[in-house]
Length: 224
Image (cartoon, rainbow, N blue to C red; front, side, top):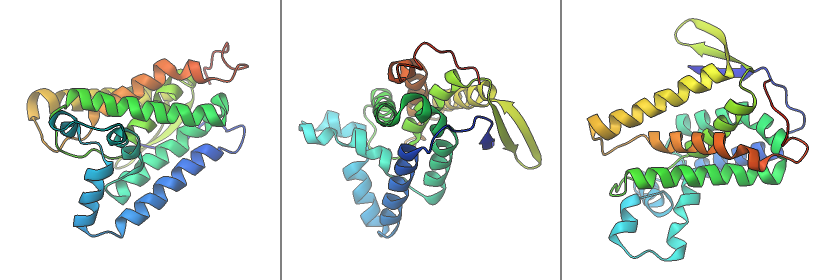
């Protein structure tokens, strides 16, 4: 299911959302100029490799990948899909939180998502990259605050439907949970999609969003 637009108009220009998108696109453009060996080296250096922390004695700077990994992507499809979802849902969440709190919230959700992946796959030596966990946090916040908003959704190959945000986002997180369960208990894949990072980011967003709302928004209930 591909979301095309939501029914909740933004109240102001989402400068932080746009800045995050531009930074991710610029970083990906730079990495796309590298050869395969250079990109792999970059991913192992700044991507999250859980097994590293058990095999070696890490220094404080070695924990940087819990942050830097969310600014790296493996393909144009990867970065565009993440940034499109951020553009679609981020503006409304940014409106409710304000610029600084929104940025802190986004980064925190990404870090929590990385930690969830680390604790579930502590011995993995596959570098994990992507903003999906942080973006999932935005989706989790939107799921609670704008649960009755309508999301125009393309369902390949022919269907175009307006779905309530709670249906679209609820279905999405269920598919991530299912994918994570299959990966963990059935497939035993060494090339995991970071399903549990997505679930962890979504849960973090849904649970923590209220602590980042602007004071005038904190006591309101959003059912847009």
